[in-house]
Length: 243
Image (cartoon, rainbow, N blue to C red; front, side, top):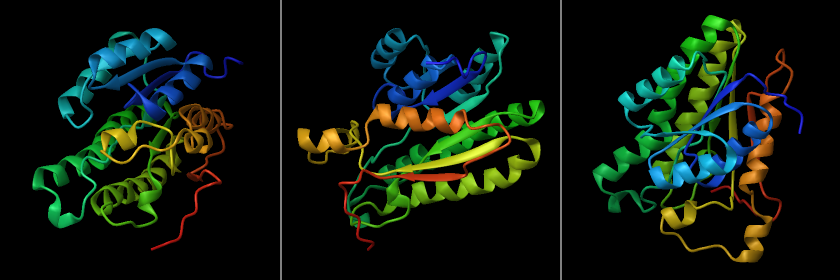
């Protein structure tokens, strides 16, 4: 693979598994200095060793952890060129009256607020050097509705709208904001959300971490004078009937 991202520094959140690993791997193979952040120290360090990334154990819902991450990167003499806000999760996928208040707040914090916090810090750096790209990983649940997914979907819909606003704010500074909206993925999402596991045959035809990594790389290596504000990625086997 060509070193298309040589001398670029990237942050990928939620990179101890799933899409995060695929994204971080693709960026690293393209020559980027990749920092991966997640809460699970053991999983994070294992991934970092396998792909040659820099691990940073932290919680993206905590302001102080974002501050520590950016300060740590700054100490290396580098600054962030790519931020991929991939961290997210179902937290509690139930009808709203069955969800605890804590789960509701946690879902919004993880799936929306964390990305806003990271984007704020990256935007300041990128505006100052007139270059950079911030990518949000959303979900088809931002655009379609199913029972039990209301809070998660609302948070992801907020993330998509935030990305549009970020695009408007950053465009005059030659900084790109992109939102990628995937659907059915072969990740650990179902297990984490206590949903039924997909069959092996289905998993072979779902969006894989490698698929997502290749898409993110294509977005990042689009010529700098061009931007792809939004892209939706669906597995062709999945039927989606609105509402």
